[in-house]
Amino acid sequence: MPRAPISRTANPKVSAAKAAGKTLPARKASKASTPVKAAPLVPSTTINKKAARASNSSPHLSFYPAKDLHSRLLALLDQIENSSDATLHRAKLAESVSELTAAGLDYYFVRTLKEARVGFVTQQSANIGLIGVKQVMTPVIRNVVERLEHDQLQAIVKSIREFMK
Image (cartoon, rainbow, N blue to C red):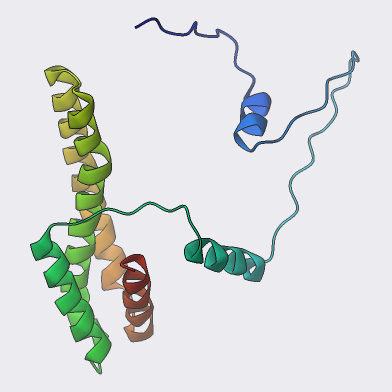
């Protein structure tokens, strides 16, 4: 399959604008460049409203974890929701979040590579890379979850429940 020619010069401003769906005005021939204005800050309430609308509408991405992971996750979420001290379940939640994240990586990346029938070396390179990602990711997740308080854990559980809808 022929490849598209690679551009030797990159213009990050144009690339970023194209990625954002914006067009930049043509530059005038002058010695002084026009400063690029930063986008105005959007209040977090606006972002939250947009996120709420986006979560209620299509399109979206989802994946199907293994049935045993799903059932263990549901049981853990029930335990945390019904617990008077959710901090007792931090270690189990950290482990479950790590497993869920790893399952998502496998579903979206490894499975896709297998379906694309990439070569053995490419597949093994991806597998080794993901092993490294998981080795870095797991302690980070554990450290973050282990520091959460009861109310924060309850909020995490609520978010996971929303993801599962």
